[in-house]
Image 1 (cartoon, rainbow, N blue to C red):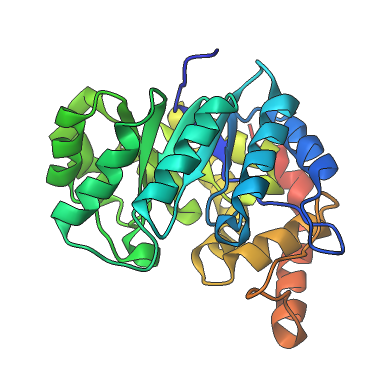
Image 2 (image 1 turned 90 degrees about the horizontal axis):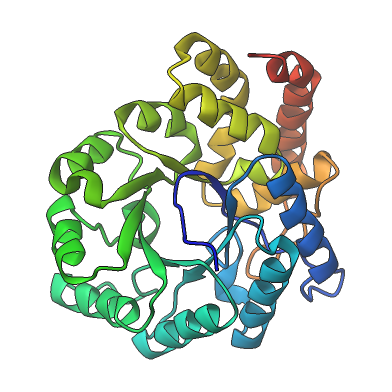
Length: 304
């Protein structure tokens, strides 16, 4: 099995649905292959953008199996590990390992917001039950729990398979703080689309991206321009991309990103309840934003 490498662009993939809202495994496989063909280093399945909370355990297993089969040895498959209970989270992690995933992205527990002792016990239970390389997911905006740099450092000292963090606090200063605290022991990936360039310049080496589901070529190019220090070219592409990237930062980000996929001909806007597809002014305004961006896409892609 390939050894997990957390560097580069790793899409947090959406989960495609058929008209009856069953998982569309045919398109899922096609989408995974397309993302890798366009330079992505792997996929992260079952995350928030993947509507993991609406999938049954059997569906989660099947999604991972489809991703692993579609990608093969070309790239990495990472499973998002999230649950209401610690026992269920451990089961998801073990199932992911059994199905050939290369890494895990570990979330704090859903709904119950514990203190550090409880949160550490939950995360530690998952980390201790797998041999896979793991990424901690810090998103205090969405999940309230905030893994502070000193707490991350504590986990690093105790769990040898914790190698990375998806930092989604939207505070680019946190990247610098983590780098100062953890040094080279921790790979830092940014998980908020509209701070990617700033986070790379602060030291991030990976991007768990959202709009990449519809724009992999542009996403990979933006990341590589920033990483290679081509500041002017990076910001030229960034300026074009930002209106779209900001769709990743609002409560209806799943519906919005899936709509973008549909508009570029690479997916469907179908979502599972309690989410509903966009309607009215929301739909009209978002379609206009997408159309305006697509109208200047050729010029943006030409940036070198």
